[in-house]
Length: 538
Image: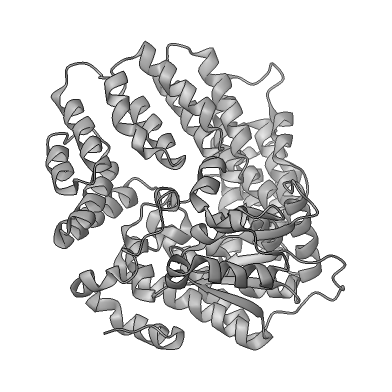
């Protein structure tokens, strides 16, 4: 590490941002080609909120020495700002064109910046350049699936299985697409089409899926024992947990879900640091909430969207699938519009950034717009500051069922959901997020329509009539067939994809009672919320 960089870092760590800027600029005047110092200066400016300066420093660093960390830092800055679109990463390609290393780095940067389609495009190009590389084809298929292009992703994996008939990861990719598309009944047939050689473990895996499809969960668990080692550790543990839960083996299910979460945490770099930073964000939001966040000084000139909030696993995906069945409603599911707004401390500037991010994806401007993002519940103060007249759907479910379901669900890990892996962390996160929500609601008298999961599955028409009245649109009977809507909406990006394509069922309501012994250490944390929301702990 250079002495110049050491000096700047020391000043920054002491909280002397002005001094760090001054000394850093002095060194850059003397050594303008110091790519490492430029990178750090860019990250420092991003942390201070000067995104234009951050972009300038990072682009200069990348022009001198393209690197994965610098590209990733730039992608994060572009995603937070309203400066350029992520497509501007094209301008950073080397003069001779985008080489293999650059394509890989840019794909990662685009993924982290939220440009999943651009990331998939880069990985497809990389795969086309290396047709004999099965890992490259797998990466392209996974990226296409993440971007919502299920058809092309499935075609990639089927072509791989034709060329590399023993590639289990390709078959698992197809299984994942079928589950996300609500076509899990077709999974067992894939093992007839692609037997993957003579490995008896593959035959056992196929038998497991057939038994699961027939509702024979104990038998499926026995078959899974014969497939040990075929699946990635976290995937096998997830299946064991789900099958154990359905077979009534609560202890086995808890052991499996614990193993699943442990495997995912170990496979996620800096997981513990992510949890720490997410909690720090929640604590900072709580502190701001005590003081009250200044609202936008500029009047609202457009009707705000509706916000569909609620803690994850509270029924938000089921509710948004019902609402998607209305012809005059457009639901935006877990899109990063609020990320763009959060880069600004001024509520008026944040609102402009939010609208620009949303407007890029609106398909039916005349429809009622609903922004659904459970983790955005912790950003209620920001939403209220931008849109004082906004209206909210808030999904509620028994807190014990919510926390248990978060622990038992395999999320695509980010800072927020990483806090669900140990049970006590999940309960702690629930407590903090609900404190933010209830304080914001009470302070600002938010206009809220609560939707209880238990009522939605028991009396869907009654609940949906209330919801459509609240949204100002007439009730449509087409909304009631949520399974048709789920199957026609394409890939479902949330972990609820398997549930929302099923007929409504009540087995998940009150499931926590079967696991009461396991939940005992966190019941005292959840009890006040059960009482507040009218749920029984007996």
